[in-house]
Image 1: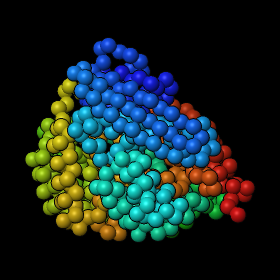
Image 2: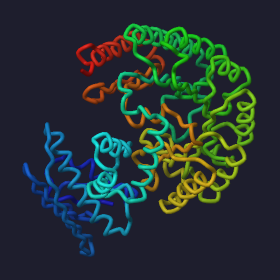
Image 3: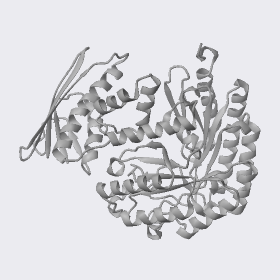
Image 4: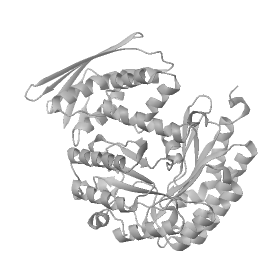
Length: 504
């Protein structure tokens, strides 16, 4: 779909308007000028001053069908040009989405939102003391979010504040993410730092040496400053790709280096690939009091697993689940993905039926996203996926199934190019939620990333300003420079948690 945009000269509008167009059309191309070859022309009249923003949008297709929208809003106080433009951009997006909804007949339930963390908007309003009824109405008016999605957001926030009642006062603690960048094979939809582990033992050894160094240095700094750790999460890649002996040494390092490990609220290890789980590795987890793991089927259809590059069988997923249970794993998460190639309602219904036989403590339901760097996106013609209406049917099935089996939604996030403009939702049995997932999504505290490809998110305890910092994604670059990256992180931490940064 080629769209000509008139009346907006600022190039900063192009990306947000393209993202919204992509919610309606398979592929869209925006031209910020007159274009005779365009399928649609949308003309804006924008006025903005210190008091108000006014936007009118007129859509014209090649048959001269017309849709129009007008939107006015008071200009809120702003401290920077960036904040001012954000208000104007949202107003333009409001009028733009309205004409596209009228033209296509498709309602976008998340409104103009294309960001990852919609629940943050509602958390912020609650923290500001805005009554819930008013907060909900503001979300509808400002972002065009539907009642259905606002209700889901509120349900999730209620659960989060039950699980972590001190969520809004954890800014003086940190969580730790530890990235292990190895997997048996790389999945077709994946863009995480993940390298096939076979034949890379030299890289693994060097990487683990650097990771131990990071853990010691960061742990020593946290001990010195008296800063507590809320959660620790081992992700990747697949952290159970390394050997049982290597896992044992890694957790021994954690206990030796990190402060008060016995008081950490939650330690999670992703064991997502069933083909990496063994009795020896489960015994190591149990030895170090770790009983929260993920075992991720993604699908219970064997043809699908083969198509996406997962080299385990459906039977192996089930067998390893029972093995983990018998080894004392008391909090198991499983992931399913809606919209995998060749899958529709029938296949997803089958996956839910198989899940019912196991009843893990939590179930994360992802909607397939065509991530820019993934094998699946690069060869999209090879991977036939369900249309938006069938994808939405599958999401509704997941909501109904989880509700009828005692699961409650406790976190969600969204991604660019996600099928059906839907969301990823984590469901759990009450009191089995992942605290780390809540912390990473709601951005209420600093999360320190250690290991290859690990991203740190430093959050100022006073202002809430977020600073991102990422370790290199490939093991060689990480191995060459882990000392420098560790020093850089400690410098940032020193500034954030210094005396002058402490609240009065």
